[in-house]
Length: 83
Image (cartoon, rainbow, N blue to C red; front, side, top):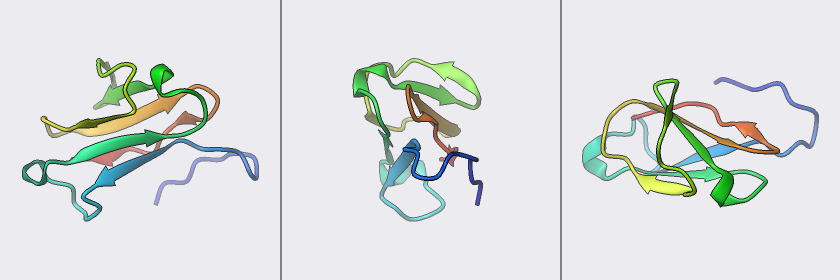
């Protein structure tokens, strides 16, 4: 697994996937939820490394396959999730 270098005890951003099994596939109606410090309204989403417009939401249902990450101020960017 990919592990970001962060100070011990630092809050890191996590991307939760529902349903939790891997690999995540579109027909399971995959929902991504960004968890981290800071407010949900400041969440920034990226798809395939590009800024992606699901602003001000901390979760959404994926409609396109790709590699997703989210960024929260104060806790940084999440590890990537492939759908």
